[in-house]
Length: 182
Image (cartoon, rainbow, N blue to C red; front, side):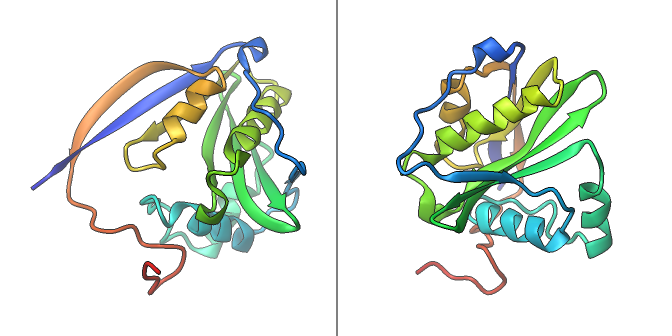
């Protein structure tokens, strides 16, 4: 039996709309990964998305990852907590001066510490720095339960919503093959 999946599309049309989250203390470090490194982005993708049904890039080859990453339109920003990667935001500059938050999230171990709002605030600010006229994102019922609320708390507004039936997905894949819930 198919299951409904709702997708929300949100946007921000001016930098002044950004409602920054408080900065956690001690403040985490957020750095741009300036060199395209498929292993890093694949690690971030699976470490963050493995708990939320992120599957569309799992079969990408090294060459496909490099093709995606090695473009001036793409930026990856990584948040570190006490030297440990905790989450990331991937920004893609698109035609028409739009910047999409292509991927955003925290590793499960860092959720609930006030880090997600701060990382999203910084990610949106970096999107505006890329010369955006609009910053946009989509999220769905398969993402983390706080995703939609975090986007809206930062000042992003819904502009479209759709619900589609999807084949049953089973359990999330986890951060690596063979992962089981502890």
